Length: 295
Ligand code: MLT
Ligand code: MN
Ligand code: ZN
Image (tube, rainbow, N blue to C red; front, top):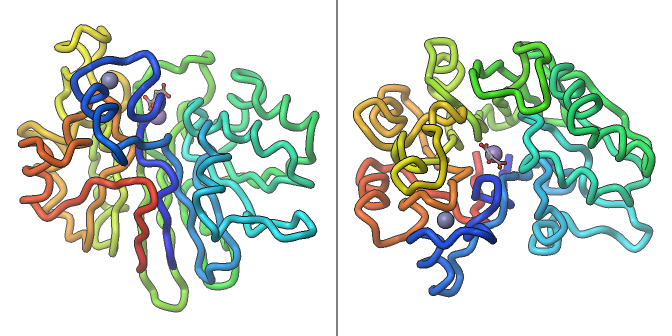
């Protein structure tokens, strides 16, 4: 299977329009460093593509990737959209896909409820195009296309539910994707608060892990005076620190580890920072838009 990172930054992108923090300022001053918002495309045959999350940058992301370009008759290689959660950075793009003849959408029942009754995105989208919704049930195998299957797993979070209380189970999920021919497995986990024993089990031994790289430090936004909450309180395990993901991941036997969903403040976004060097010295990578992973 081939996975292409369409967008490697967290909500707001990098740089973020209203942010002049040192990392945003550096990204603005150098060419080619900007990143769009969190989304990947996956395919087993390079003909049918599945989007995981639909970012507000989806239009530009599709244009930047010939694999997703439409045909003369307006059919497109985009088969379906899978969601990990109902966050705006992962769902606003659904509204930008409204010209579709029909859209196949995979979410948990909890995410569907938020999209209908909370943000209203799904209700609005349905006024423009028919949406064929498929339930994602953590633990159940989903056949996506010939040779490509996936299984969602629940990612517990105490992050504030912005749109009110829904069921907690399935509010955030990760996906384990399997290429039936090569047997290769890939885990996509753009939001994770804590690596619980169950989550470690899901990640264990996969060929490639794409994981939440939102903040380097737990108090990154607090120190910069930009927010009152820590990274963990916002549902994101920091990368650095004694109990950050960088310290915890090496014991899990993952073939290749790539950080995604970086917040605009995270120094690993820049190639020449000590934090970036630490990631790379540990044999891990920081995604850039357009990065492709084959397993
Ligand atoms: C998050 O995951 O915390 C988001 O990127 C925040 C946002 O979308 O604004
Ligand atoms: Mn996000
Ligand atoms: Zn910034």
